[in-house]
Structures are given as C-alpha cells and as structure tokens.
Amino acid sequence: MTAPEAVAAAVDEQRLWSRHEALARFGATPRGGCNRQALSDEEFAARRQMLEWAAPLGLEAAHDPAGNLFLRLPGREPRLPPVLSGSHLDTQPTGGKYDGIFGVLAALEAAEAMRAAGFVPRRPIDTVVWTNEEGSRFAPGMTGSEAFTGMRTLEQVSAVQDAAGITVGSELARLRAAFPEVPTRPLGFPVAAFVEAHIEQGPALEAAGLPIGIVTGIQGKKTYRVRVVGEEAHAGTTPRHARRDALRTAAAIIDALYAAVVDADDTVRFTVGRLVVLPNAPSVVPGEAVLSIDLRHPEAAPLDEFGRIVTETCRRLASPCEVAVEPLIDAPPLAFPEEMRALIRNAADRLRLPYMDLPSPAGHDARNLHYVCPTGMVFVPCAKGISHNEAEAATPTDLAAGARVLAAVLAELATRD
Ligand SMILES: [Zn+2]
Image (cartoon, rainbow, N blue to C red; front, side, top):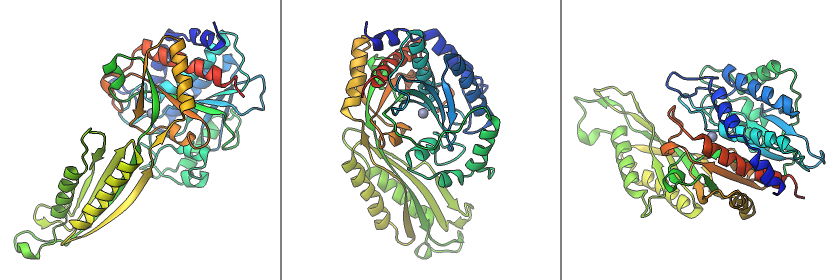
C-alpha cells in the first residue's frame, strides 16, 4: 500500500459523520437545517469546536486579518509553501449541514487520517475555514478567499455592512477578542496547491450513481441591475399615448430576454429574481422599475454573447422610458488545470471509487485560489441536488469516499516539489 492509500484507508466514516452532526448544532433550525451567519456567535462556536478537534492532533491554529482560520499539520520542511484544503462554515439563513462544512471537515479528517497512519507530510498542510463565503449576512460573499488572494483589499471587505449596519471590520475585531489564544498570521502567503471538497449542489452524481465528481471548472457569471425610469401618472386620467409606464417596459424587457437567452442544449442560466416597482400603488402608473439579472454559462464566448443580448435588448425596448443597465458581477468561466484533475482521477482510480467529470454551476472559494495556485475540487453527491435548503442531505458513505480521495490527493501534493 502506498502512503496516500494508507492515509485514505485511515479516514473514519463514523467520525466524519458525527462531526457534521456536531457542527449542525451551532445555529440549528427547527426543520433540521442550519442558520449560521458569517462572524456570528454561532459561527464563532463552530470555529471553537474545530479548534477543540484540532488541538489533540497537534495542528497549529492561526487566524489571518480577514478572519480565515488555518489549522496546520506541520511538514518535515516547514519553510515550504503549504498545501491548503477547506471551505466555509457559514450558511444561508435556511441552509443545510453540508454546504461548505463538508469541505472543512474532510480536510480535518485528512489531517487526522495522516496522524493515524503515521504519515508526516513534506510540506505543511493547512485545513482552512474561509470567512463569509455565502454572502448572506455580508454581501458580496467570498470575503476571506478574496482578501487572501488580493481580489479585494482588507479595507474594502472590512467596510461591508450587514442589514443592521454592523461592519465586517468590527466583527473581525470581535473574532480576535474571542480567540485571544489563536495567533495572527499575515494576510496572504505562497500556497503550493488548494483542493476544495464540496457537495455537488446539483443532481448529476446522484443520477449517475457515482460517489466522486472531478470538477472541470466553474461556470462564468454576469449580473446586472436594470433601472427603467418612466413617469408616475394618474391611473384614471392619463391616456395611453401619454403614459411612460416603467413596469410595462420592464415586463416587455423581461419577456424578450426570456425568449432570447436560450440555447439548444439548455446550458445557459438566466434569471430575473427581483423586481422593485415604484411607487407600487394600484392607481398610479409606475414611475420606476428596477430588475435584477443573473446570467451564467460555463464557456466564455456564449456568456459574452448572451451578455451582449441583455444590453442590446434593454436598449431596443426602452422607449418611451429610459433604461440604464449597470453591470455588477463579471466573473469569467474558469477551468481547473488538467494536472490537478488527473491527480484527483488517479486517487479515485487507486481507491476503486467510480467518478465522472463535471463542471461546477455554483461559485466557490476555489475560484479565487485558482488564480494564485494550482487548484482542484472534489464533489460528492447530495440528495436530489438540493442545497441552500434545510433539507440538504448526503450519506455517510459518500462523504467518507470524498474525504478518502481528498486525503490521498493531499498526501500526494504535500510530498511533491
Ligand atoms: Zn459552499
């Protein structure tokens, strides 16, 4: 048996499962899910539980200024850049027990399995908890991985406020005060590789009956805010020719876009999820309508083409109102390096765990790490593909299979030059 295989064999399915159950108590909802907002007391409690599990393993804990938590398994050559693995502990308000949590616990399980197998890596291996991935309490999300990789500055992320006006910065100060025993590590450092394990959040693996997904990449995303400005008028006295009805124009734009943003293989994702009408009164012709557009595709060229259709359609159908299209997010599609995918594939092969390649429709912290180090992702199935939902479910066997593949891959990466 090779060292990665011995490490994989030491993954303990029952321990991994019971830790998911244990973390689910922090922010548990009546319907069996989790509401654990970023940098809340509940999330602090989950971090404390992670520290309690890490301590007997001799993992070295550190926070960085963005609140990312690192639990380091020391390597034989401590000066080498570490291998990182992890995800997030925050959830949506009606979230589940596995989104993010699995990636953190699988990385911790890999470290525990290495200890159990007597495997000492050459490079350090950090289990990492990224701050505020979900963007639920503090929008936008991916705070920790964006600050770590320099996508946003610490000043930028610190200024973000929640609905109550509390800033990320003040909650980061509260985090430092709550964990005085955890030393601070500088923000951002060289990383040898990053691997994130995650539930699929889609139905493909379950439908195929396969425990392992090798993630080919993350689909691209563009979002827009479209503001339609007309003129408020009396519903009873204003004739049709004199109206500049913002809702009517918005409805025409939405209808046209749903007809235009389509493809033969049903790959593009187009959503108008929000429509705000002013003054939203039954007897007033609407003076203003603001709608949100969320557009996604795994390939750059079609994504750009559909983006062009969005702006062109809004311009074409604006009259008699005025329409302003404000681009918000423009995240291009990305492909993880074939070398990382091959490592994951080889590990699954050696462990006789069947797999398939698949893209990630959702964004993850791995998107940001991809731009600073070789990055890969391992998916495991979740029931019916349901996620961001209290009913999110996964099986102990599938979670353990994912953790085994992850442990073998980390052991391999931590041995290389
Ligand atoms: Zn997640």
